Length: 211
Image 1 (spheres, rainbow, N blue to C red):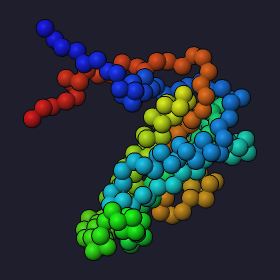
Image 2 (image 1 turned 90 degrees about the vertical axis):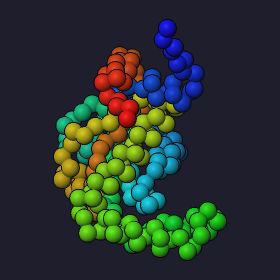
Image 3 (image 1 turned 90 degrees about the horizontal axis):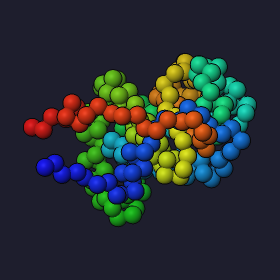
C-alpha cells in the first residue's frame, strides 16, 4: 500500500498553492514599506561568494508604468498590478567581495583572514570568463525574484514573472548601468477574481533520477 505524505507545513502550502496571476485589482496599491519588505526578503536569497550582485527597480507610479508598458509588450499586469519590479543581475565583479564580506567580519561570523580565501578563488572562477559572469548575474536575479514570489504569496498577494520585454529599451528607459542585466519583470499586487489555481505539474518520476 502506498503511503502518502500529508503536507501541513505553511511554507510548503504557500509554495504549492502559488500560481502566476493574470488579473490584478488596480485600485489596491502597495505602500513603499511593503515594497521594501519584499525586496528585503528577496535579498535574503543565496548569492555566489556573498556577492549580492542584484538591483531591483520598483515601477509603481502611473508615469513609470506608462514608460515600461510599451517596451514590455503592453502586458496588462504592468499597469494593473501595484508594482512591477525590474529585477537586474549585475555582472560578477570580484573586487567588491571584501566590502560585501565586511559586515560578516564585523559581526564575528567570519574571520578577516578568510576574506582573501573567498576573493581569490572567486576571481579565478569568474573574471576571465564573461559568460560565467553573466550566467551568475542571471542566477542571482532569479534566486532573488523567486524569494519575492513566495513572500508575496505568503502576504496574500499575486505575482507574475515575465520575460516579455525589450531589454535594450529597458536599459535606456530606466538608466541601467553597463554591467546590469534586466533578467525579468515581476509584477506584484492584490489579485481579483478569475485567476487560475496552480496548474498540474509533470510527475516527479518523469523529472527525477535517483542515483
